Length: 314
Ligand SMILES: Nc1nc2c(c(=O)[nH]1)N[C@H]1C(S)=C(S)[C@@H](COP(=O)(O)O)O[C@H]1N2
Ligand SMILES: [Mo]
Image 1 (cartoon, helix red, strand yellow):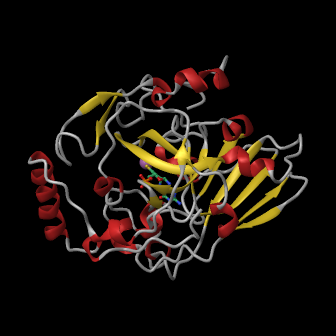
Image 2: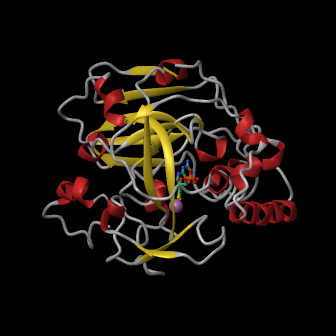
């Protein structure tokens, strides 16, 4: 396993909006013409090797350029381009993650140790609650692998997660306008946390995670809306009661604890029946596809919710 090196922001990722937009059109034209392009960012990021993992997907990957420039990461601003443009000063190393709470062996994991976990390629369909989706080739390891190392107690019923707070490196956490209360927090039921689909991701497209995607380590739960995938994690705590979650705290009528992708349960302000695949039919194209129950992972996870009313538990 290569030693961990933080990804670096390429100059190409910090361009003004006009150039950025025309570059995007150029990419589309080049793709249509069958011309392969490489960007500075790809050359600079640290390569990361991983073995093929389970859950193969027969779907077209979302272009890396879209995955790394169309983001939600409010610590860096609320615009889709803010995280890629405003995260250049963020330092994903050194880093450590505390795993604590109802466990026999609480432990602080340094990033070097984390990067020595058995890394797998996990290409997942990802669905944002806002109605767009991507297909992302993550690199990571099952969350259960790290939970196993701390000996969870029988009393642990949920897992709570916390993002780092660094206003000096995360412009959305400083200044007058705070989009959300910090730290960003999320949670899973223990059986969801231990499900083999649930991973901690440390890379994508064969490289360490770009800052805007949650460097150096973030959660990925592919059957849930994107906001469950908390980024830049510093704390994982096993607890007895259902944890606080940022979006439910900020608007409980619109965002619940479970947040399972469900085309049959609309958001109060929009339908969740279909989604726009980012990067297909042109970056801002109109290719819409049907949203699938549990984001297409029903065979794997529907049994976790047997007997539950998924309209009440949204
Ligand atoms: N800490 C933190 N994690 C976060 C968010 C955020 O604003 N802050 N946004 C969430 C939302 S709404 C989505 S859709 C995904 C987006 O992940 P991506 O940018 O890697 O596609 O991150 C989630 N994780
Ligand atoms: Mo999202």
